[in-house]
Image (tube, rainbow, N blue to C red):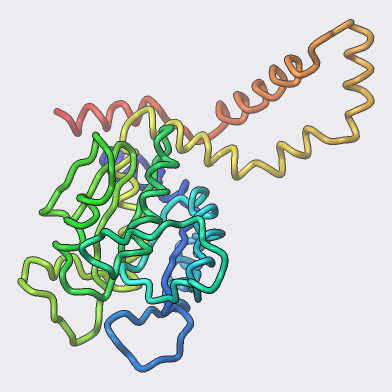
Length: 295
């Protein structure tokens, strides 16, 4: 692919696409064989859509509130998270209390589990993590959901973009999008039709929206470098083989090296540098496209 034929935004989207690999969906209706309703979720169609794009897509359908504890710790590791607004699951009052405290003060009880989950993700991302969260719902009052999210998430740096149904907190972007139903449209106002997303459109939506968080010369370099390292993990492990342990220890003893960790850090850093130097990163071309775009 000749990058000279693409804008800087398109280059950034391609880099984000290469980087994004794990997308997690939380929807209690995912595997239910129930009569069709506005909150149905077709897990197979969704996973197939992401598989075609080379993405690992996991779909979890919690059956009770305590199921959310394990799910939350997993979400911290995901590149992108998609949540239903109304998680219609038992509150598990008869079970040991869950670590996830529900938002009993929320104006919209349908978000009683989704809001605390998002709050935890936002809190975990305070150290600089980049996260994309999509509230993908069959509910019709999208503006109210967006407002509810903005009101309930505590942060001094939050922004609300009503025309995009988006809430942004530092490096975290939260979108509200509607589940698309063929031949059915009950959302109030034609302006909300643009926020209805088909299952097949979800991969492109996530790539493009994640890219908007990372478009830039330095983020592009970091993302593509991380992708190159991740794609070469097996090769790197092959170079740092356990068969070399005796040679490493022998070298340390012969050269009187006290800090073997420092030596390994240097060797490992050199290996990573060589890997990135031989990658397809074309920084000069990026700079040219970046200048063209801001001119």
